[in-house]
Length: 155
Image (cartoon, rainbow, N blue to C red; front, top):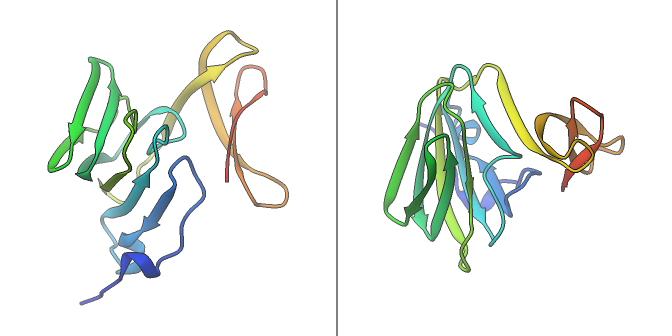
């Protein structure tokens, strides 16, 4: 048995106020398990995305998360969970006024190819994006694959 305490784990850079890799902390080999705290406006992902090989389940402990999906927006509130199958587009965002606490579980742990879309002002629409670390490794950038513009910076 392995054990971890959320408050003792380091935060990861990204679009959430807090992201802690619980699965890695307990040595999970077949499951990705992440703890999140989202301030208003924060999201789980860097953009609207899908994973080719991984199903994801999000359990919202407190607050409300609005998931953008191919079928429209879906609100998930504290005590509820939602599942996305491999290849299903989604992005969960805290559009409310209160802090969100949630768990995200993915299986298998390796998600396969991830496709991501974000707004690119230079291209005047949503385009495919790549992630890059800054040279000094203090932030993650989203980069438009069509024009090379930086569309987001996450510390």
